[in-house]
Amino acid sequence: MFVVIFGRPGCPFCVRAQQLAERLESANVIEGHRYVDIWAEGISKADLEKTIGKPVSTVPQIFIDQTHVGGFTEFDQYVRENALMA
Image (cartoon, rainbow, N blue to C red; front, side):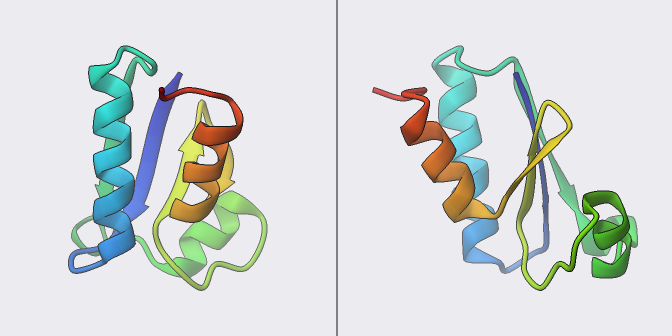
């Protein structure tokens, strides 16, 4: 499993998503993760909407193995429901 997080500087939920991905990676639950700073990369919410296929109002936007999961809350819920962390 590989996680990609699209976020921006100063976003507390982006930080929490990164921390969760790092814990999953440390526990060898996922192969790795990548954080994409949408501001540094010049990616707009409209660009993300094209990729996701629906309106985007917040970040982070998180993908697991190229499947859109949602934001931090959905990512955290996915981890809990699939018992990825003890």
